[in-house]
Length: 193
Image 1 (cartoon, rainbow, N blue to C red):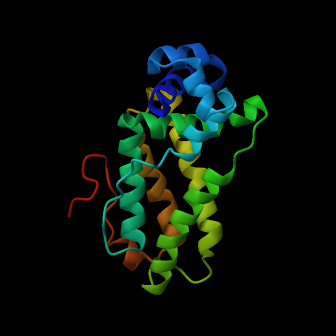
Image 2: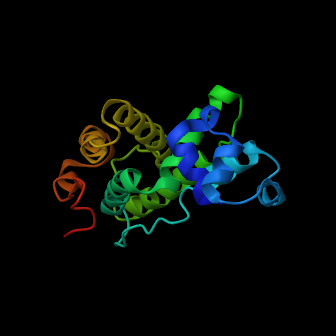
Protein backbone atom coordinates (compact mmCIF):
# COMPACT_ATOMS: atom_id res chain seq x y z
CA UNK A 1 0.00 0.00 0.00
CA UNK A 2 2.85 2.39 0.84
CA UNK A 3 4.45 1.68 -2.56
CA UNK A 4 1.20 2.47 -4.37
CA UNK A 5 0.83 5.67 -2.36
CA UNK A 6 4.43 6.60 -3.17
CA UNK A 7 3.78 6.10 -6.89
CA UNK A 8 0.70 8.33 -6.81
CA UNK A 9 2.37 11.01 -4.65
CA UNK A 10 5.44 10.93 -6.92
CA UNK A 11 3.28 11.41 -10.02
CA UNK A 12 0.73 13.88 -8.65
CA UNK A 13 2.12 15.48 -5.50
CA UNK A 14 0.10 15.80 -2.31
CA UNK A 15 -2.60 18.07 -3.72
CA UNK A 16 -3.07 16.02 -6.90
CA UNK A 17 -3.15 12.65 -5.16
CA UNK A 18 -6.41 11.22 -3.91
CA UNK A 19 -7.22 8.28 -1.71
CA UNK A 20 -9.25 6.91 -4.64
CA UNK A 21 -6.18 6.94 -6.92
CA UNK A 22 -4.10 5.28 -4.21
CA UNK A 23 -6.78 2.61 -3.62
CA UNK A 24 -6.96 1.86 -7.34
CA UNK A 25 -3.18 1.63 -7.64
CA UNK A 26 -2.87 -0.58 -4.56
CA UNK A 27 -5.87 -2.73 -5.43
CA UNK A 28 -7.20 -2.55 -1.86
CA UNK A 29 -10.36 -1.33 -0.17
CA UNK A 30 -10.77 1.93 1.70
CA UNK A 31 -11.08 -0.09 4.89
CA UNK A 32 -7.60 -1.52 4.37
CA UNK A 33 -6.11 1.96 3.98
CA UNK A 34 -7.96 3.46 6.92
CA UNK A 35 -7.04 0.49 9.11
CA UNK A 36 -3.38 1.55 8.82
CA UNK A 37 -3.69 5.28 8.13
CA UNK A 38 -6.30 7.73 9.38
CA UNK A 39 -6.13 9.97 6.32
CA UNK A 40 -4.27 10.93 3.17
CA UNK A 41 -2.15 13.12 5.42
CA UNK A 42 -1.17 10.11 7.54
CA UNK A 43 -0.27 8.14 4.43
CA UNK A 44 1.82 11.05 3.12
CA UNK A 45 3.61 11.32 6.46
CA UNK A 46 4.46 7.61 6.31
CA UNK A 47 5.91 8.03 2.81
CA UNK A 48 8.02 10.98 4.01
CA UNK A 49 9.35 9.05 7.00
CA UNK A 50 10.00 5.83 5.05
CA UNK A 51 11.74 7.47 2.08
CA UNK A 52 15.13 6.03 3.02
CA UNK A 53 13.87 2.54 3.95
CA UNK A 54 15.17 0.83 0.80
CA UNK A 55 18.47 2.65 0.52
CA UNK A 56 21.67 0.65 0.62
CA UNK A 57 24.36 3.26 1.06
CA UNK A 58 27.77 2.47 -0.41
CA UNK A 59 30.17 1.06 2.13
CA UNK A 60 33.44 2.82 2.80
CA UNK A 61 35.86 3.95 5.43
CA UNK A 62 33.79 6.95 6.45
CA UNK A 63 34.61 10.61 6.23
CA UNK A 64 34.47 12.90 3.24
CA UNK A 65 34.74 10.24 0.52
CA UNK A 66 31.90 8.36 2.16
CA UNK A 67 29.83 11.55 2.24
CA UNK A 68 30.55 12.22 -1.44
CA UNK A 69 29.66 8.65 -2.36
CA UNK A 70 26.48 8.79 -0.28
CA UNK A 71 25.20 11.95 -1.96
CA UNK A 72 26.21 10.63 -5.38
CA UNK A 73 24.30 7.43 -4.66
CA UNK A 74 21.26 9.47 -3.58
CA UNK A 75 21.39 11.41 -6.85
CA UNK A 76 21.18 8.16 -8.82
CA UNK A 77 18.52 6.71 -6.51
CA UNK A 78 16.37 9.82 -6.95
CA UNK A 79 16.15 8.85 -10.62
CA UNK A 80 14.94 5.29 -10.00
CA UNK A 81 13.57 4.90 -6.45
CA UNK A 82 9.91 5.87 -6.29
CA UNK A 83 9.62 5.78 -2.49
CA UNK A 84 12.63 8.09 -2.11
CA UNK A 85 11.38 10.47 -4.81
CA UNK A 86 7.86 10.60 -3.38
CA UNK A 87 9.12 11.11 0.17
CA UNK A 88 11.39 13.94 -0.92
CA UNK A 89 8.65 15.53 -3.02
CA UNK A 90 6.19 15.41 -0.12
CA UNK A 91 8.78 16.77 2.32
CA UNK A 92 9.41 19.72 0.01
CA UNK A 93 5.72 20.30 -0.79
CA UNK A 94 4.43 20.06 2.76
CA UNK A 95 4.65 23.81 3.34
CA UNK A 96 2.14 24.33 0.54
CA UNK A 97 -0.48 22.34 2.45
CA UNK A 98 0.35 23.75 5.87
CA UNK A 99 2.12 20.68 7.24
CA UNK A 100 5.47 20.51 9.00
CA UNK A 101 7.20 17.15 9.22
CA UNK A 102 10.75 18.32 9.81
CA UNK A 103 12.10 15.11 11.34
CA UNK A 104 13.17 13.69 7.97
CA UNK A 105 15.40 16.71 7.37
CA UNK A 106 16.89 16.16 10.82
CA UNK A 107 17.42 12.48 10.00
CA UNK A 108 19.35 13.36 6.84
CA UNK A 109 21.35 16.05 8.65
CA UNK A 110 22.25 13.53 11.36
CA UNK A 111 23.33 10.98 8.74
CA UNK A 112 25.56 13.56 7.03
CA UNK A 113 26.82 14.80 10.40
CA UNK A 114 28.02 11.30 11.30
CA UNK A 115 30.32 11.30 8.26
CA UNK A 116 31.55 14.81 9.01
CA UNK A 117 32.48 13.73 12.56
CA UNK A 118 34.50 10.87 11.07
CA UNK A 119 36.08 13.35 8.65
CA UNK A 120 37.08 15.56 11.59
CA UNK A 121 38.69 12.57 13.34
CA UNK A 122 40.58 11.82 10.12
CA UNK A 123 41.77 15.46 10.00
CA UNK A 124 39.95 16.00 6.70
CA UNK A 125 38.17 19.23 7.64
CA UNK A 126 39.39 22.80 7.77
CA UNK A 127 39.76 24.35 11.20
CA UNK A 128 36.64 26.25 12.13
CA UNK A 129 34.21 24.03 10.19
CA UNK A 130 31.19 23.28 12.37
CA UNK A 131 30.17 19.72 11.47
CA UNK A 132 26.55 20.10 12.61
CA UNK A 133 26.06 23.41 10.81
CA UNK A 134 27.64 22.04 7.64
CA UNK A 135 25.38 18.97 7.78
CA UNK A 136 22.35 21.31 7.90
CA UNK A 137 23.77 23.32 5.00
CA UNK A 138 24.32 20.13 3.01
CA UNK A 139 20.69 19.05 3.47
CA UNK A 140 19.54 22.47 2.28
CA UNK A 141 21.95 22.52 -0.68
CA UNK A 142 21.04 18.99 -1.73
CA UNK A 143 17.31 19.70 -1.42
CA UNK A 144 17.56 22.86 -3.50
CA UNK A 145 19.76 21.20 -6.10
CA UNK A 146 17.38 18.29 -6.56
CA UNK A 147 14.40 20.67 -6.87
CA UNK A 148 16.20 22.64 -9.60
CA UNK A 149 17.12 19.41 -11.38
CA UNK A 150 13.54 18.12 -11.17
CA UNK A 151 12.14 21.33 -12.61
CA UNK A 152 14.67 21.61 -15.43
CA UNK A 153 15.30 18.01 -16.54
CA UNK A 154 13.11 15.67 -14.50
CA UNK A 155 16.28 14.89 -12.47
CA UNK A 156 18.14 13.55 -15.52
CA UNK A 157 21.07 15.83 -14.67
CA UNK A 158 20.93 15.38 -10.89
CA UNK A 159 24.20 13.42 -10.54
CA UNK A 160 26.06 16.14 -12.46
CA UNK A 161 24.43 18.90 -10.44
CA UNK A 162 25.34 17.18 -7.15
CA UNK A 163 28.93 16.81 -8.39
CA UNK A 164 28.95 20.54 -9.23
CA UNK A 165 27.51 21.30 -5.78
CA UNK A 166 30.44 19.47 -4.19
CA UNK A 167 32.97 21.28 -6.38
CA UNK A 168 31.62 24.52 -4.90
CA UNK A 169 31.36 23.30 -1.28
CA UNK A 170 34.54 21.27 -0.84
CA UNK A 171 36.97 24.22 -0.83
CA UNK A 172 35.06 25.67 2.16
CA UNK A 173 35.10 22.32 3.94
CA UNK A 174 38.46 20.67 3.46
CA UNK A 175 42.11 21.57 2.83
CA UNK A 176 43.23 21.48 -0.81
CA UNK A 177 45.48 18.51 0.00
CA UNK A 178 42.42 16.51 1.12
CA UNK A 179 40.19 17.70 -1.73
CA UNK A 180 42.76 16.62 -4.32
CA UNK A 181 42.55 13.04 -3.03
CA UNK A 182 38.77 12.82 -3.19
CA UNK A 183 36.74 11.41 -6.07
CA UNK A 184 33.51 13.26 -6.78
CA UNK A 185 30.93 10.73 -8.06
CA UNK A 186 29.50 11.52 -11.48
CA UNK A 187 26.47 9.23 -11.53
CA UNK A 188 27.34 5.72 -12.64
CA UNK A 189 30.74 5.84 -10.91
CA UNK A 190 29.23 5.93 -7.41
CA UNK A 191 31.14 3.53 -5.21
CA UNK A 192 33.79 2.81 -7.86
CA UNK A 193 37.44 3.03 -6.97
